[in-house]
Length: 463
Image (tube, rainbow, N blue to C red):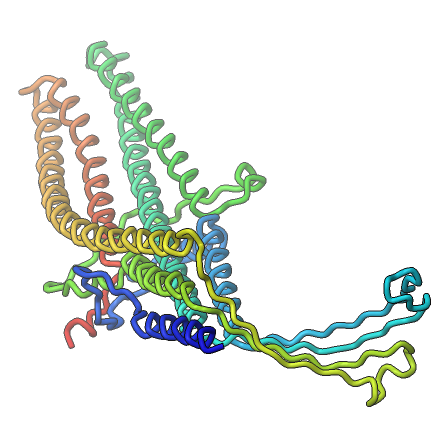
């Protein structure tokens, strides 16, 4: 008896000392953001003040498949949090049974053979004592996983909105280019008709007529290319909007906007703390915290699991006597289950949790590095795109003047028609390039907003 008490006392001391040293692991060299100031403007696309764009974004958020999948993942994580939270509380169950049995009369006890009914009705209450914090940390892990799922949903939401806005402006740019090409085609066709009449009177040569026909053909080819690009752009936009396949061939939308908006003015001195609000960084951070709690849960498996249970009910051979006080039964007790020799199973699970934590740590650091690189690239590229747009606009003004001078020189007979043809072709190309440059600037804006995790609340920054 004394030896048995010593053994159990030693085991209890080992368990308790191990539990006292158990602490939530915190990986080194990981900088966890502490500021959570709300500087992000969630509805940043509304700064463009375009109702058509707003409607498209709302449709994408409602019907896009990726958003629906993200919402399902959040619902799953929320259910897991509820399940983990429920494990920390007692469970109450009811049990009812009814049967009839016959005993043997040929047993060693020489008891006579009997037949009888058996009825039972009971309620069972069970509860696991969370002495080591295992259930608490499992609940914390589930809660952090839920936050990570929500942040991942926000990341998908941000990427989706950015894609919709960028794709919409791409369609607007093609629509604007289509108008430019259509106007050029109309002017060239009018010129061709005039040249054909002049040729009939012998004023111009067949060379000049054929040259105009070539210009008209070129304008038609350019217009057809733009139309094809607009179809592809709309198809890509339909995918983002989650348009049903049955409706894809039945309806189409015309882009009402015919001119691209101006670029957004980026305030000077945007703080790097804006990156803390990037949803992918938040998702990686919460995943890291969840992995920390998982290590705690894995280590807690070394210690015993203590459960309390109690039952209160009735048993009777006759159904009419089941709820009498004389048929009352009850029981109360506890159980302790402790691992002694598991051949390294628990240690292996701990190492797995530590490896998953390392993966989460590296993933978090990668998300931070990626964020800084994307912001740096977006800022640099944006400046280059703005300069390129200014050059094309200057070139457009010059080319318009050259077109006027070439036409004037030809009318006065001091230059051949080739100079007019070259000026006309170049002017159309430059006009289309100006629209492309403006779209590129807008894409640079969207890339910067996406890299910052959304827009920016200027009032918060200045304050």
